[in-house]
Image (cartoon, rainbow, N blue to C red; front, side):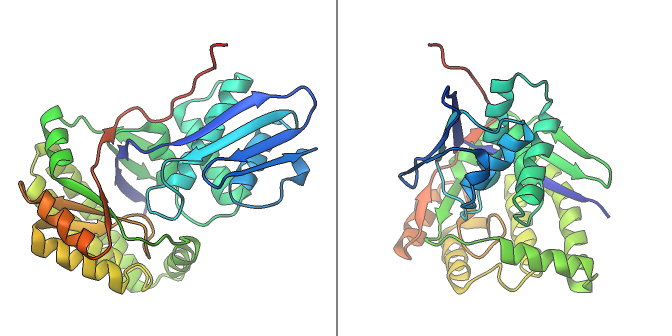
Length: 310
């Protein structure tokens, strides 16, 4: 069957900083949580989450001891923006820079996928790792033996119009996507006809959305966004909530032409595409319900690594 995803990256980042140590010990600073811990050996890193990411990536690069790692997110995991995968990509990129390994973007994205999904055991796909690594707007095709990233050349005018009319809304709740994604995988593997039909229709819609985006037909793109959301809700009953349904309804009444919940579902960020001149009305409407809104600024660069000049 294969899969396809239309993805873009925004100016919201995950960071990893690495510094060698001479005493052989490992320190990990988690800036968002205000935590710092020191370990004598890599095998001691057992706390899960970000700590387990560091352990898995360091093991893949055969770096068992002697470094300081500092980790930071602009947006926390569980918000639907792919923060966990972006952090994993940043870790791979930092270790590659440090060790001097020769790796393509495909190598980096695939290793981040292997670490997150197999080494650490977090359920999910691979679109976030590829999106974070490559950056920009891409149509990503997942085939049995390979993954193909097709960069989309979208005009500056279309990008400006999308930024002008789009809005991110934080629902106020995060979620652990593992349960939702695990059930989706089980439904797919058991050949649930409702899920398989929804996935096939979503695949067709993705190609249509790509065409409308490239042509600058953004109102039609927004309508397809609504159609994709209705299909996505058929994948699992936990994807939509009473709160997200209400936010979508109010946003549409205020002038949103299209909208959906990002990520696996259940909470996190929503995306709205608004009728020109209605963005502020939509913003005020969803904030009256407790949502937090943010403008969208697209990013085209993907993974960036550098060495400290000192």
